[in-house]
Image (cartoon, rainbow, N blue to C red; front, side):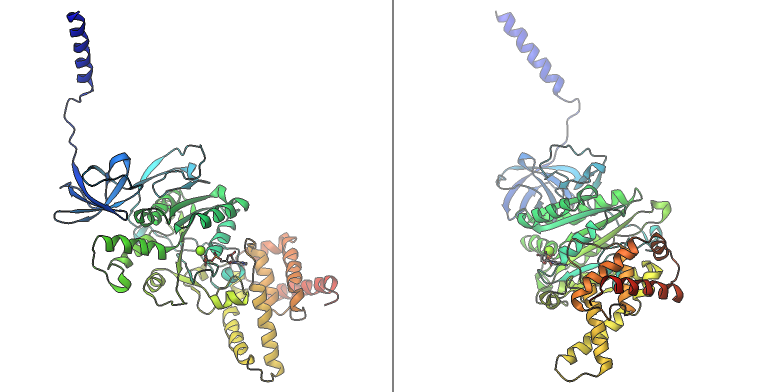
Amino acid sequence: MLHEQWDKLDQVIRKAKETIPETPVWEESGTVLSVDNGIALVKGLANVKNQELVEFSKGTMGMVFNLDEHLIGVMLLGEYKHIQAGEQVKRTHKVAEIGVSHDLLGRVISPLGIPLDGLSLPIEVKKRLAIEQESPPIMHRAPVFEPLHTGLKVIDSVVPIGRGQRELILGDRQTGKTAIALDTIINQKNEDVICIYCAIGKRISSITKILQDLKEHDALSYTIVMLAGAEEAPGISYIAPYAATSVAEFFMHEGKDVLVVYDDLTRHARSYREISLLLERPPGREAYPGDIFYIHSRLLERATHLKEEYGGGSITALPIVETQAENLSAFIPTNLISITDGQIYLSPKLFQKGHLPAVSIGTSVSRVGGKTQLPAYREITSALKLSYAQFEELEAFASFGSRLDEATRKVLDHGQRVRQILNQPQYQPMEVTEQMGVLLAVVSGSFASVSLEKLEEAENIVRRLVREDDDLRKILLQGMKLTPEWKDDFLKRVQELFKKELADS
Ligand SMILES: Nc1ncnc2c1ncn2[C@@H]1O[C@H](COP(=O)(O)OP(=O)(O)O)[C@@H](O)[C@H]1O
Ligand SMILES: [Mg+2]
């Protein structure tokens, strides 16, 4: 009897011995002192590095953010309600990473790569990329020369965007910023562009609507949605845009063109401010910490167009910023205006008047995109911006009710038609050759005889004319200039169609 028990004990000991590694594993751990608002203060971990991931109980991760003499400030990246003072924290010797692969297309993920769409499909990880990457050196960068069409007439004509450009979308709340970004994503359906929509600090209800819109317009198959919800720890919002950019870089290095929308960086800046204040970093202007400019510039510097020998792909960045009471000179908007290659400003006044998209033509610029515009398109719209500004000035005068001479009347009539043509409903991006046809007709005055009520009908006639004429489309898409004879011929055909189909106007 005793013998048997002895044997059993011997077996147990042998087994236990097998599981003990030959060399002892070195593990460094510290102790949690306090947890609050997504920040943990930790003691110990003498050798931990800045930005290193540390592991709390139940697998919750945190990123080391502050290294003081005796205390370590950790930004928590997940559920933290269960973390208690006194428990252990372990080093991981790793920085924050995200798993990337082609499986991500069509999925909704968290900034740490965890699927959030409830699909049981696994995401097979091909590579793990650190969320913070150095931006490509100047020598690896190629000029931006290919256009990225948004499908919105007002943007593609006067503030064109190129692949590899960074264009800021800014405006007050509810002015159509997200709508422009979504339309741009929807317009990439046949353009071979991979889209990433990074939602930062949004409420679940608005995220659900955005996902539904993307799905309804068949845009999910080439889109990755990254979510950092408003109810999550501020650390999640803080890392989201960097993680989204790492995913974009994976595709860019494969030679793909990628579009990344950051919606929005105001919330990103606020999360960072929250973390910094909790960690008692000194506040500066508007209580933002001193390195707020750097966190955005190092993010947007990663958007670029690579030279062919380095992959040839591109990342186009559309950061969104929310202004308050149209104050463009607040801290975060001015920072971002100076970092990006131009801005699209949405005016609440235009929005109220129903001029949608509410792009303020005078305040919006694109410093790189002009070179990428199709030559024929550039020719058609070269005078548009200036003549539109003149029209707006005249209109302001005319509203005083004075009697107008014939010439002024004409300018106003023309301007109204241009403005109405530049309006566009949501979810209806327009193909670029159709845009060119319509804008050529309007700037040449073909719509002068059409009443404002019939304008939409007339526009559809021109669109159809372009759509059904392959030769015409070829000419518009090619890099050549439009000859006067060609233009006359086109406008004559437009007039004939108007005569036939808009008979009673
Ligand atoms: N071109 C448009 N035509 C019609 N409605 C639009 C257009 N652009 C935006 N909207 C509507 O305006 C509202 C605000 O747009 P949204 O993009 O959410 O604003 P923001 O992101 O600036 O807060 C939404 O209800 C949206 O559907
Ligand atoms: Mg929005």
